[in-house]
Length: 158
Image (cartoon, rainbow, N blue to C red):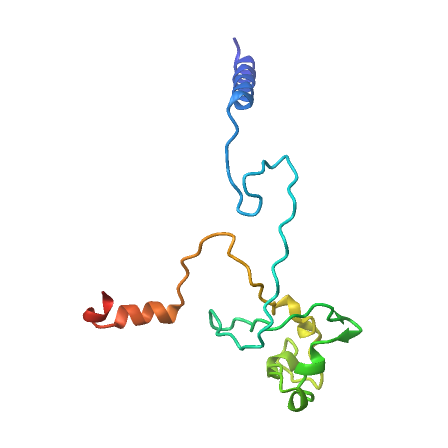
């Protein structure tokens, strides 16, 4: 048998073996035990947190999360509902946190009179929080918690 025929026979044998192998069982946290080929009912949408409480950020330079519902907010090229409260000219009346000065800068750090077009669509970076159970377990710890644990006296580490 020449090499070409041998390669063909090996490929055919491997493909037959692959079809005969039992399916690899993987459970997706979003789908649950439903096989991939079957359609599932979508999960209920979790309610959006609406507490208006400023949250601690998880890492430096993290964009603040939105502490209230934004359902029905218009944010498009013609109008941005977020700016009705968060634009610097409105914050005295609304008591909403003002936009950072970085939102008024272009890519060359020139300060603009209006919100920069590259910072205009708020939900590109800022997101509301859902009161939902995590899909996968998480053991994340903030760096400050880790540093405190490492620098704590030996009697505190128990």
